[in-house]
Image (tube, rainbow, N blue to C red):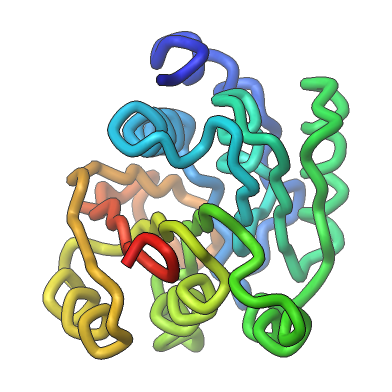
Length: 216
């Protein structure tokens, strides 16, 4: 079971600092604290996939999911992020929470399978809120998910636009993992970049669980 209550988790995550300089080419948006807390709480209370686990957070940004996983009892959390500016914020956030079991590694997520080539499925649980694959990042969400599936010996949890639901399910079955839709959430994207015309956009988002490796 989760070691802290949902409301307390969300309150903690509300204090996590955002990207200092979000980059449109990387499609950087912070996972909102209410989304992160609900997703992580469901992952722990329904499936026990955080407490005592080794957790990988792909494209971790400032560390919202990584910090939440640590607060819910993960033994070790490794965040992977390509952007050095985001890593600086991530590490500052971890210092604020005095978390010693959370690490951030600068790397390209898509190169991780070759980096871990000598270690078969090295993480119990993999978390990701991938780029949704808009603009020049078409297909990035599925590319991130495929990497996650190769690295998890237990389960992968990933957020995807609800509009892609059938495509996500089709790809999961193609990759021979068992997909489960465990939550439907509302993701409020704030006005982040100059080309955004509205102050915010409400996006329907699915939280998926994929059983991989030993759990499949």
